[in-house]
Image 1 (cartoon, one colour):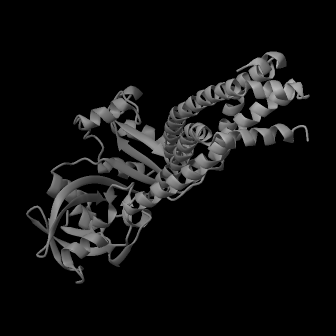
Image 2 (tube, helix red, strand yellow):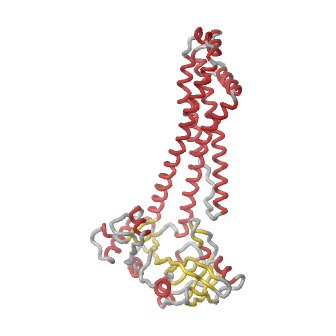
Image 3 (spheres, rainbow, N blue to C red):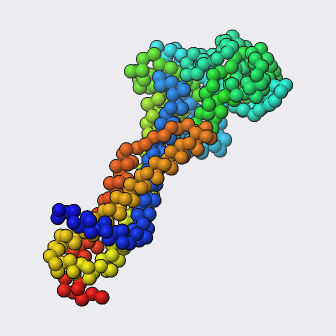
Length: 416
């Protein structure tokens, strides 16, 4: 009963000043809502990236080009590529050499390009994906009609293509695309297959409008090059992933006559490396955004302290009267602490509800634009948000509450 009495008095006091209480709650509400949105969306986006990466499988070793003397995931490498540094040393023969490793069950080389693809009905600028023939055995999507191209067609630079379902509809409507011709630039290509529907990769690459060509055909007849961007090698035994990746590094250095690791013009990574990079990036961004959002919680805490001081000042006579009829300093202390805790808990609760609502709304909007990252509710975010808001109330409410509890009853009764 001793604990409940201050709680009841605190509740009545807050109801008597609804506008002031509501404004105080609003400051904390915004902070808690921001934390919930950031954590929920951060988890959802991480899940989305990992899910998108699954189309390549989880049992691979990837070799890709990079600027020498830089790290694969460094800003220097990214900036160098963006500024037009061209690395032309990765070749199909590197993939063939990697494939001789006893723990490699298959590989494909790949090169991306872009071009205008046209038929007698329509045309579209789209991505061109040159791949080796084993791509269709190793990649986690299938051809729904037609066939993959053969090793002979790749080596002879045959003008054959496999297209995505959206491109098929745009170029041929409801007609059967198999056996029909389309143009890439000035050359005609025969459609030999249509891929299953895949949607957008990472929300920006329309896989259903993609054109798949033999890698050598893309190299020689479209781009006029003899190199590739990456090689995907798939493992027989995933327990030997690290050793196999190390062996692939040695193979590549031997192929490129590199003795100084700093001069590596390639980077070797595994699915574990991808997961670590995604987790590090996601956790770093989430931590930064949560720290920024937490500033609004601190601002809300300062607001609580100010409101509590005003409340103490306005109710000085009431405090003196309560002490005169037997209320102890502890009773007064807990009365004002309960007011602060109640305000912050209410702000935290409403913030969690609104944060969850906005997270779900963001998911629906993202899905509408092709980013199907799913809806992820973080219980850790819930606990952190509510705990932080209540702790904020305690920390910023203690000093005004102690000030109220220390008032001399005689002086308080004289207060006007």
